Amino acid sequence: MSEPTQPASAAIETVVVDGLGLAKSIRAELAREVAALVEAGRRAPCLAVVLVGDDPASRSYIKGKQRACARIGMESVEHLLPEDTPEPALLELVAKLNADDGVDGILVQLPLPAHISPAAVAEAVDPAKDADALHPSTSGKLLAGTADLISCTPLGVMAILDHHQVPLEGAQAVVIGRSNIVGKPVSLLLQQRNATVTMCHSRTRNLPEICRQADVLVAAVGRPRMVKGDWIKPGAAVMDVGVSEVDGKLVGDVDFEAAQGVASLITPSRRGIGPMTITMLLRNTLHAYRARTNA
Ligand code: NAP
Image 1 (cartoon, rainbow, N blue to C red):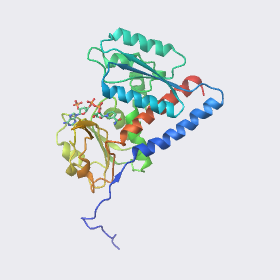
Image 2: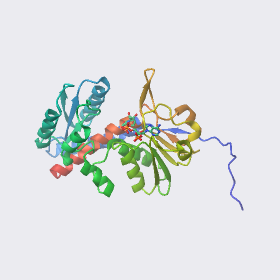
Image 3: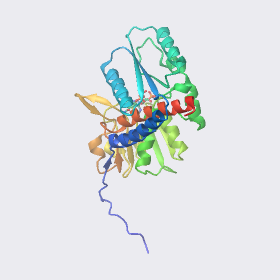
Image 4: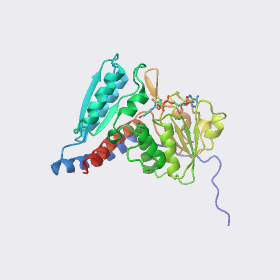
């Protein structure tokens, strides 16, 4: 007997990811872990956050990260440096934080002013405290499949996919973007879960056609509404990492409205990936603390 077939026009119900809700439930678990450490007489884990310059968006990001630390009982220390801080002075501060036994995670907020090399800063952070997972040795471990500290946004994407039980084994995954902080690590994580991954970038030909093959589509570009509804395979899980501001509103890389009824799952540009990224920073800091203190 043949299987009953769905009419071609059957509407797909698109689930909008509640990234904030998921982040809160993971943070509650992290808070319980921190409380148990403190009850056992240990100090709380501590994240050091460094900001060079006074970009309002970066300032608000680091405030959000510090608030998130406080809410789960984690310590945080803030270092605000002027825009014209010379690179050696920043590297000296990072070296001090590396040597400070009370600091478990170090995050230097990006973007940095043009006169400071992000690669030099990433390499200066002690890999044992690499909460943002940008040190080349941390990336190397990710490549080898042995990393404990993993880039926060990619970890957040994977946690969302797992929470929604999106099948990854043998799935076609397409990642648009190949940055060290999102595109490359998320591609590796998907591949480690046995997805077949295509990485796309600004020179990719036939991008819409490639996207249409994706069971899992990750967009990490920073071009508002670049991914159109007809680039999405019906039923695909769409992780929209990109964030741009258009007319004072946050907009993702994906045309969110056009994806309704096509994607099976989509992250919104607010309360989607963002809260999960911060949560994974807390997770990395706790992991770094446990590894450093044998807790
Ligand atoms: P990035 O370093 O600027 O990388 C952007 C990537 O997009 C590059 O690989 C670039 O290709 C590719 N790209 C640019 N134009 C393209 C096009 N027309 N077609 C295909 N690919 C194109 O950015 P990022 O740091 O990875 O961040 C990406 C976006 O995610 C940004 O909007 C950022 O704000 C957002 N983000 C959000 C969170 C969050 O928590 N929600 C966290 C991190 C990042 P080339 O390599 O060829 O230049």
